[in-house]
Amino acid sequence: MLDSNHSISEIAQELDKACSTISREIAKHSKISTKVHYHRVPNRCIHRFNCNKSYLCSKHYRICKKEKCSICRECNDVCPDFLEEICSKLSKSPKVCNGCAYVKKCTLAKLFYSPQSAHDEYRTMLVEAREGVNLTFLEQNHIDELFSPLLINGQSIHHIWLNNKNEMIRCEKSIYRYVAKNLLSARNIDLPRVIRRKPRKTNPIQCKIDKSCYVNRDYSCFKKFICENPGVQIVEMDTVEGVKGGKVLLTLHFTGLCDFMLAFIRDRNTARSVIDIFDDLYERLGEDLFKKLFACILTDRGTEFSNPIALETAPNSAVSRCRIFYCDPQAAWQKPNVELNHGFIRRVLPKGKSFNHLTQEDVNLMMNHINSYKRKKLNDLSPIEAMRSIFSEEVLDLLNASIIKPNDIVLSPKLLKH
Picture 1: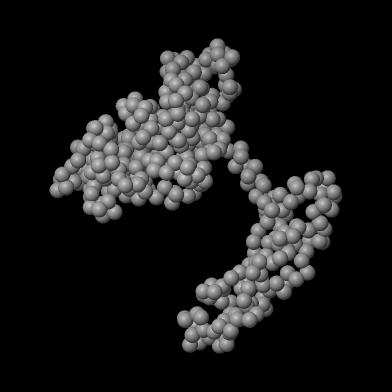
Picture 2 (picture 1 turned 90 degrees about the vertical axis):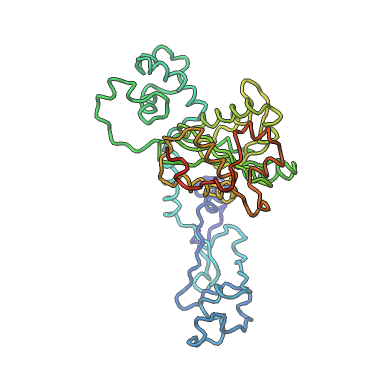
C-alpha cells in the first residue's frame, strides 16, 4: 500500500490498527539508500546546480576529463564545502520514498520500507529475546543461597525443591539447567547421579541483565550529575580478564589530577564479587572517606556491574555511599582513562595469560609499580605522588599503596614470576 501511495490512515484502516502503530513500524524498519539510476550522478550536495569547482580530486587531475566536479561520482567525498540536501518529502507522512514518482530521477538519499527486511529483523529480535536466562541477579542470588549449601551437603535438587516449594521462583528443571551452566555456586560434581550421564551438546547459556538497572544511570545522566556537582571525584571502573572462566581483575581508576588506579583480584567475574570488594573498601575507609573517594563511578554494561543498588548502598543499612553510572552500549571511549591505563597492566600480564596464580599481594605489588611510574601529563609526577598531594599518606596506607623507587620499577612479566 505504501508503493501505491496510500496514506498511513488508509493503511491503518485496512489493517485495523492504530495510525501510531503503522507509523512506528515504518520508522523502525526503514532503510537508507544512496543508490541512483545507472545513468545519473549520485550528487547530493545542495550547491550541485550552481557549483563551478573543478579538479578537486588530485589523484585524477591529469586524467580527469570532466570540466566540473559536480558531475563526478566522487564529488561529495572530496569537496570541503559539501552540504547534503535532504528531500522535503521525507519530513512528511509517511516519511519514506515508497511510491514516489521521482525515485528514478532523484539523486538524493532515499528511505525505503521493505516488508521482507522488516520481517527478518522482527524474527531476529524474537529469537534474541528468548535467548539466555530470564533471571535477575537478585533472583539468582536467592536461588544460589537456597540450593548451593544443601546440594553441597549431598541433597538432591528434587528433595530441596519439594521441601521449599513456598520459596521457589523457578521450576525444578530450570534449577538443573542453572547448575549445569555454572550459574550457581554448586556444580554438577555435587550431583552424584548427574555426573554419570553423558553431557548433551548445548549452546552456552547466559544470564540476562535486568535492564531496569540502567534507568536514570545512563551516560546523559552522568553528564548531568557532574554538571550539578562540579569538582566531584570521578572513578572509572572496568574488568580485566585473563582466560575465560578464570580469575579476573576489578580496576578502579581515579580521573582528574592523579591518574591513580586500584586493582582487586576476583575468583569469578560475578556481581557478588564486585559488591564484596565495595563492602570491604567501605568498611576499611569509613563512610566519609569512601564517599569522598568514590562519589561518582562510571562503568560499562557488563553483567558484573548490573546490581547498582547493592553497590550504591552501604551493607546492613540504607545509607547511600556512591552513585553508579553506565556508558552507552559499545562506547568504551566514554571511559578512556581506565582503558588507556590497562596498557600498563598488560605489560605485566599479557593478554591470554591466566590470573589463577595471582594473589591480592601480587596485584598490590603490580599496581605499586604502575602507580609509581612518572607521567608527563602529571608534570612528571607519578600517580601515587599526585594522589598523596590531593589526599594524604593515610589514605595511601588504607589502600595498600606504597611508592617504588624510580630505578626499581619493573613493568614486564618478570615482576610477578615466583
